[in-house]
Length: 340
Image (cartoon, rainbow, N blue to C red; front, side):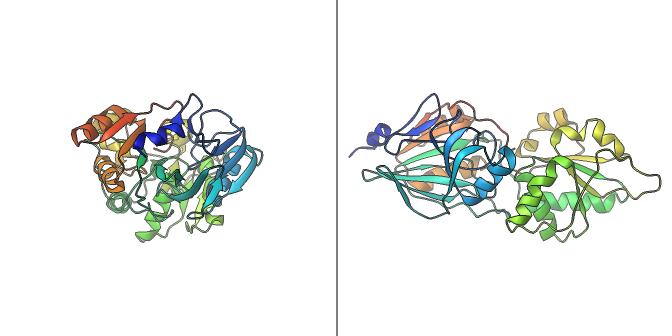
């Protein structure tokens, strides 16, 4: 049976990637009857599906973000557990992206396809590490699929942050982070580096941090900042405050006198992006695979075919062609960079 056989039961549509043999979509862009969701970011986990299959953690994240009625029914599937849907055997393998994130492993007619969702290979104390799964077809993300992207070790970037806090006693470090995944990872990395002081949170960060705590991720002492309260004269400024990236420069941030501003993102590798954000302390901390990790992962899967989506598709397809591999861009609608 040749590799094209997979195309007959797994293929892109206007709604998203469709598994015909099991009659379900993976991370569909619009409401469908049955969806398999790789993780809880909003460009992958949308409301309105009649049935959702995902890891228990992703389901809890979806309920928190979308409400308990975000889908008609939720079906949890633990990592590594096999399930047959129609003619397809499905299991979820760790993706290492955020808490609950998973690759979708599909087996049908003697062939195996792996849909990566978003993934990273670097360590993350808030989620299960990426599992390499050998396959015939690998559907990979390409968020940072350009040679310029070589992410620094996150522990080193956190070291820069904590060293800056020590050098600038009395100044608040106001760091922009995305609320799901990046925020909790940065907190946990700070804790692992020995930072035990309270970490203050913009209100938009609180609910998901509380969820992570309930799901067993110890983040230490966190203190929400009252959005209506003004700083009192003589009151000690909080040393570290995490907020949405947009809040770093908006009116909310004016409560902090002379803050050191930062932004934690893989995009901080690009000087133009740093200048655009205007932050003083760029932190290159990404929850996606960088260029070398993408290439190494694709080669290690042994996949005969590679489908590329979500990001710099053309660059990765071109490079894989130079490496003698069959690759094509899927250009699925609705995927963006919420995770970064």
